[in-house]
Image (cartoon, rainbow, N blue to C red; front, side):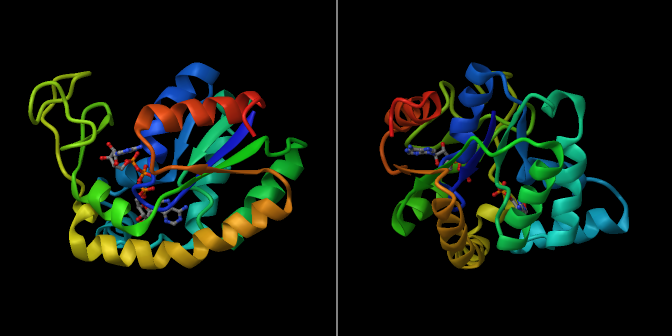
Length: 217
Ligand code: ADP
Ligand code: AMP
């Protein structure tokens, strides 16, 4: 099963990915998580990645495609994977097509979580993440049981550097046209499922589950 979660920043990809990977036994391949991990290093490349992320800019396609190619070649991805945050541009989508053609595995489904701009701003403005285990919360929509502390591992929660209002504006602008272009690309291939992502987390979850089981389209 090769699945893509597509949607603007804040659409709920990471939130939904957390249960999909458990239920369907797929590795979670999040380019955002991979870049955040790489940005912690001391090398020149780490510094470059850090400045792209903090500015809300996309990391160049060549580097992004290379890290995904290496990641999906690993053993745990041989039976399938869930891509979250990749592809984000047409060249990335074309490169993914080529990678899948090389190994003779088609895309199973692209789930597009459609959410309006105002709701995305509310979500990104209130997002809190756990630096320990990666769990995602929202101050209002999905608060932790104990304020500021992760339910799963007890680590103090943080806000992401790129959830500042100025970086959010750049991210939404950068990603808007690209996302529309990818929606058209996958719609033309007949693998796209559009879902209303602006519903409560549980309802989105049910809709995704139905789409992935093939009984909800
Ligand atoms: P993405 O991975 O697409 O950037 P996230 O999964 O991190 O988005 O979600 C962004 C924020 O919105 C988080 O704070 C999350 O708790 C919250 N959120 C996710 N899905 C929903 C939803 N359906 N309704 C309300 N808030 C949501
Ligand atoms: P995310 O966690 O998906 O919101 O991604 C955080 C940041 O990582 C983005 O704002 C980009 O700087 C970078 N990034 C993640 N995925 C990609 C991608 N597919 N292409 C380019 N940059 C990416």
